[in-house]
Amino acid sequence: MADGRPASEGDEVATLRFRPLHMRIHASFRPRKRDRIPRGCRPRRTQRRNPAGRRRTGALGREARGNELNRYERIWLGALRTLAAIALVSVVGLLASACGPDAATRVAGRVLEDYRKKASARPLPPAGSVRLRLSPAGEGAGEGGIAIIEWADSLYRETVTSAGVSTVRGIQAGKAFFTDEDGVTRVGSEPMLAELRTRSYFWRRAFLFEDRERAKLSLGPTDEKAVSVRLRPLGGNELTLFFDRRTSALAGAVSPRFHLAFESPTRLRDLSRLPAIGEITWSGLPTRRLPDATVGGWHGRFSQPAAEAELIRTDGGISLPASISGVPARLAIDADADGPLRISPELAKKASLTGRRDVFGRVLAEGATLQIGTLSMPSLHVEIRDSGSPGIDAVAGGVLYRETVVEIDPSGGKARLHDPARWVPPEGFGRNVLDDDGNVPVALLFRSGRRLRLRVGVPDPSALVLSAEIASELEIDGPAPSLGGLVWGTLRLPPLPVHLAARRFDANWGDAGGIAFPLLLRFHVFVDMPHRWVYLSPAGKP
Image (cartoon, rainbow, N blue to C red; front, side):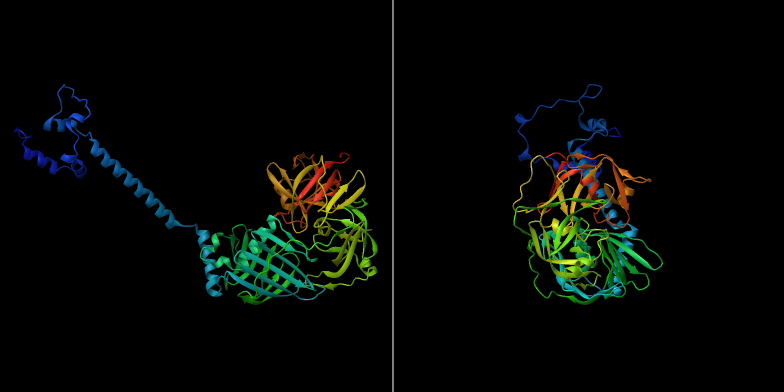
């Protein structure tokens, strides 16, 4: 002891009592007598000696030990460090959650909340419908129409009817489907599915749910008249909603191939593709059970496995002889013609076909028959309009691609239309995947890892036709633009001349451009859109 007298047992107890807490706690870990290891079974310890060679015993040993920690103290301090680390992580998490999204996202959330409160708007139920009355938006007013939008859980359907013709698009079993003017139903592509998911998200007002169905939210462009927010629905395209700054009313909705401009809560202008004016006349619970969509409805009748016709080359395109409602005609093949068969007014007059102008300004007639060799397609709808090319009486694209395997044989100078049910893929041809954008065949090409979705077989003097946005991304410019490094399946294409089209394609939707016939005629081609394959072989080879 400090006063020179020997340490007693009471002094040891006092010393232990006034030790710091972490030094006293280890005493509670001492094993009870009945739990102690028998003396003969204890492991042999190696005695540690001090520099003077004496064993550390008694009070002098404890003082000489200094700041060294025994086993129990190390366990206690390790537990303290673990608790401190957990507390630190918890505090960081709480601070991060308190910060939340950035300021712009919070502003976008307040914009949606203001719209919900001031317009008394709320999300629509899991099953519902919206009915719109359509009227023409441009010159040459035609008949009105009706648009019916229906949904039930994961099912979605849009039906548009005008001038006695109906088209349907929707989502079923997680896939897009569409029914064209002739009643043919087919499965759509991934870009079509993304568009329909975005439309479903908007019409159901899913952006007003508290979690917005997990759609990503950000603040869009703002000016003195309107403020906008951007949403990215799961599996859909980016959707931009515009709101009036003064009234917080919904002013517009913009997404690839989906563009609405609102004049009032119930009156809008649809500028998606063909303009029309719509008025919401009903919004509420469903009025029927949604029917199941079934692929089929074909019109083609083959008396032989294939129909053959002469292949006629035109300026940047191809055509072949045909007969429409008994009138001889020169028919051009064009992948851009995704709607009904197009015929000229002169041919319509000769065939005694009279049409009705629909709400979108198209003149449609029914009951036409297309005959190409041994292929007959009765009861077709046709659109009466000028072909735009001298000497061409009619234009067909989706009408042929949806029901036949289109063969283009430049070396033999023939075009053949095969029955998909009896056609056998040829040997010695390279096979590449083909997509389907509403009766339009789309090839998948790559350049430095960048995928390009290009329509197969569009008329143009150049080898490729690209949208201005894609050309800018690929840094294509100059007086004679060209593009190299393209890979089509196993084919590496040489540098190709490019024609830039400003408004012909929608790159944001997934429509990058087209493969023109000057490039396509370098190959012997089978376009099998019913099975979604294209077969290629350099012209002159099997």
